[in-house]
Every structure is written in C-alpha cells, then in structure tokens.
Length: 237
Image (tube, rainbow, N blue to C red; front, top):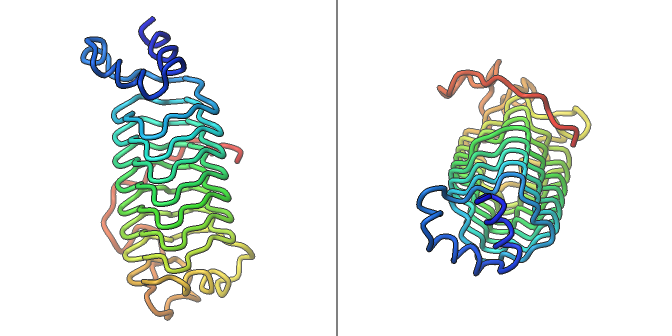
C-alpha cells in the first residue's frame, strides 16, 4: 500500500509529492520504493529521487531535467525519449536501461555500474562518465561530443557511428568493442576526433601503434579489474 500510495502521490502532486513523502515518517522507514512505477510523460523537473528503487520503472517521454537519481537502483528502467538534461546518476546501479533517443546533455554518470544498457541515438554531449562501468552497452549513433570518459569501462559495447568529437578518453577501456564496418581504420577515425586520447585500451592489433592507444591481447589484461562478470541475457535493443 505504501508503494502504491507513493506512486499515486507523485502522479497527483509531482515534485511536491516527493517533497511531502520525504518529510514524512514513511520515508524514514521505507525510503522511496518506486519499482514498476508508470511515470510516462510525467514532469519531475528538479526532483530529488536519490536512493530510490526504480527497477522496471517507466519514464518514457518524461521531463526529468536536473533530477537527482544518484545512488538509485534502476535495473531495466525505461527512459526512451525522456529529457534528462543535467540529471545526476552518480553511483547508481544500471543494468538493461533503455535511454534510446534521450537528451542526456551534461548528465552525470560518474561511477555508475552495470551492463547491457542502450544509449542508441542519445545525446550525451558534455556528459560525465568518469569511471563508469557500462560494458556490453549500445552507443549506436550516440553523440558523445565533449563527454568525459576518463577511466570508463565500455568493453564489448557497440560503438557504431558514435560521435567522439572533443571527448576525453583517458584510461578508457574499449576492448572487444563493435563498430560500423569491422574495419579498424573506421574506429580509429572515430577516436582520433577526441579532445584527449591517452592510454585507451584496445584488443585490435592493427591499432597497436596508434597515438594514445595501448594494445592488449585480451580484455582487462593491462589494468587490474574486478573478476570477469557473468553476463546476463542481452535485451533485444
């Protein structure tokens, strides 16, 4: 009942409903239980949803500009075509999230952890993905211009037509990535447009002598990392 009551309160009052809930006793006892919530098309601009459980929640076409979503559980949430300009996802758990077509300009994804998320055709211009772990994700036709990817882990991800213009790639792991036509020269043409390209890890022998790249015969070989993850079934993006 508290879960359903909270969802109804937010649908009725929007941001004011979240503020009201946070000021009450139920928030102290139960936090923000919003799993499976249907918030399609809602306006929650500037809301504080930090620490919420939002697994399987639906935010398609929602206005989530400057929303605080740090330290949240977002597995399998759907944000397709939502506006998330300036949103904060710091330290959130993100597995199988759908960000297709989202405006993620200046969004903060620092220290997020997850896999198999979809950023197809999303705008991540000037976003921050410092030490973000987003393996097996899809960045097909995504705009990462000016994005900070320092220390991020994008192993096995789809980088077809990804725009890296003026991006910062410093100790970024791009081992086993996929790109447009299987030609290493094409991937190099994408990467060389970055503002900073230093110690970027690749498993492609043909790129071993390129400026700023470090070749490894297998992913995760150069920098000590966590044990190899057990990949879940990939969603059909």
